[in-house]
Amino acid sequence: MKDVIVAKFGGSSLADSQQFMKVKKIIESDPKRKYIIPSAPGKRNKNDHKVTDLLYMCQQLAAHNLNFDEVYNIVKNRYTEICEGLNLNFDIHGILEDIKEKIRLGASRDYAASRGEYINGLILSHYLGYEFVDAVELILFDKNGKFDAKNTYEKVRSRLANVSCAVIPGFYGVMPDGEIKTFSRGGSDITGSIIARGVWAQLYENWTDVSGFLMADPKIVKNPRPIEKVTYKELRELSYMGASVLHEEAIFPTKEAGIPIVIKNTNAPDDAGTMILSDISPVEHTGTITGIAGKKDFTVISIEKTFMSSDKSFFRKLMTIMETNDISVEHMPSSIDSISLIVPASQLNSKLDKVVEEIRIYCEPDSIICYPDMALVAVVGRGMINTKGIAARIFTALAKNGVNIRMITQGSSELNIIVGIENKDFEKAIKAIYEAF
Ligand code: ASP
Image (cartoon, rainbow, N blue to C red; front, side, top):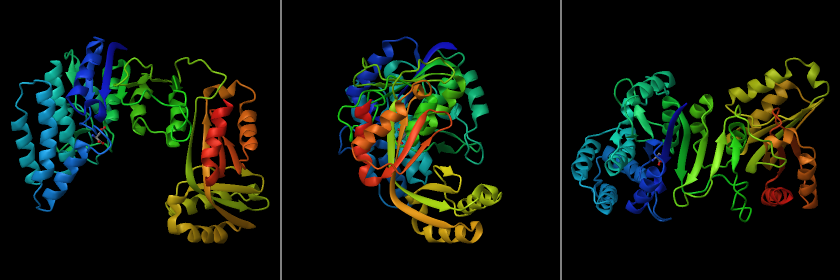
């Protein structure tokens, strides 16, 4: 691994010139921070707009032959104010006019959106005195729009081999025909991870406006403790259940390479943040849990059939019904004569009656009962494997607080315990489990 840090700064970290100044100070405080990935300017306050949203709006108006001057002016003012605030002698005006003309002439949605990062990257590179390397030189998509990992890593490695310091805009890359393509929203996190993997960095820093992950949702638990260290696998279990600080797809490039990610706060750079460590690097097993996450609004389809497991085609038929109805099953706890399918209610919508009918016809169960309004709470911790009594503490806490547990599953990696409860008990359950640890 190289003695290099890749640092990505999110939209709120680069929302105005004051934030740019903080970012510069952070970058200059460690000479290893050589490759910098900016997002587009985000919100400065609750009622503000993200530049990316404004650019999407401009493109949509232009596509309908409507005047978009007013919206584009907001974008222009944001960047002009940043340049003025930083005293930059740089022709931002010409760049902004050129992009506006392209949007007016029918540039694609992805092109328009990508300009938020592009312009912010140009400004940041001038401000830092770093080389600007456009993402179209590095991040490649194939003709179907799928990220082309192999060729991208090769490009990143060779193009940056002799570039000591660079700013590379996040969020987009290029298709073989030269068209710009973006990742999904929040995708600058992915760019940062890809660059870290491509240059084989020793660390990927993701700078945002919170000091890492918290053990539980602060909207439910008052002042939850921060998570200092989490493994990639634990984070999967937590993010999957709704904790969102980092783009879900951003962990894969660095994870494969065993590169740690640290989530840091641009507004409180001395806070430790959360370190995401590869499962191969030794992380001490704590005797406690790492975090609690959960999600409401699941439906449980509970199916009973005597001698279910001796009917060899039963599970195949059941899964085929789910597949043909385009429903993904989140969990499937089973016992000798019964199985429950836990499905996000949003996936079922109006399909529930049809699905139940098909199960009746093809699987011939003794009974099917559906329970709506269920919530899942996942308690995650690498320490569970070696620590006795964690499950007991969870269940005791829930029982003491009058929460009725409707289902329990434990992941095969012994990394998590998931309990199914009623929606109405959701907040109470998370509080109770947090208190117990
Ligand atoms: N600017 C893009 C968005 O708002 C990408 C990012 O911020 O990561 O989604």
